[in-house]
Amino acid sequence: MTVPETVDVEFVAPRHLAGGGDPAWVTVPLHRACGWSYGHDPLMPRVILSSPDQKALLRLEPDPDGQWWTLTHASEPDRPAWYASFGARTPVEIIAAFTDALTDPTADPSNARDPLEPLLRAGWSPAYSHHRFASPDGTARVDIHETTGTWWVGTSLDDTRPPVWQARFGEHTPGHLITAFNRALADTRPLLRQSKALSLPAYGTQLINRTQRELPLAQVALALEDRVRALAARNTTTLPSAPAPRRPPAGPGHTR
Image 1: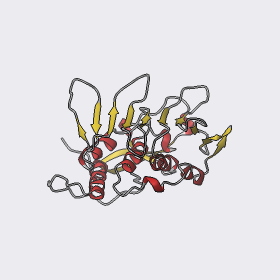
Image 2: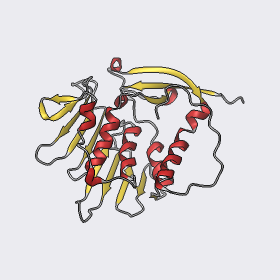
Image 3: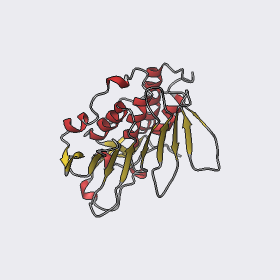
Image 4: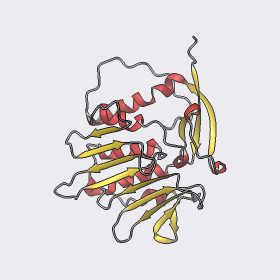
């Protein structure tokens, strides 16, 4: 059987409506590049990863009535326990921005910028109150609870329908992690999705721009490996010594 040399992909914008994508974009680098360990239970449709210091726990668990991704962190001398959660259709690239910031050994939480800065720079504006911000196209909103300081992020194609996905941050979630999430959320570059695996809401798709292209199969297949290697180098984590396959020349428009 002849193996195809190219694969059909789509670049989807706005990125917050591109669908969830491949969870491995988050879980594999955490394990292979950042040293997070996992328990193996083949009879359960879930993934549980714990950080090397055992303070953070990430659960990926199909839950039709709730958030699929939940990250909890134990209390520390300078911060109470906190949590973050993400719905099933939250693009993995946006979740990865959060986990990449969490595992960044050079991060300085005490020097965090205003988490709203990336949104304001991207043209997001206050909606209804000073504690709610909306994307320029109105399909994404960020709410900050005035009393508790908790964050709620939601995307919707229609005000009469349920959100496409939600993200929630507890009141003690480090600000630099929310900043990283918001920066990825406000990024205007489209996200790559393989056409066969693309899953979008069946309604309101006139708000979603899709550009079809053909890319070298090896380029798409090696994107995750490239990500693992980059994070491993950042974290000075030793990778398996197997030789890396050569990458083809980068194709146009690949945003991962």
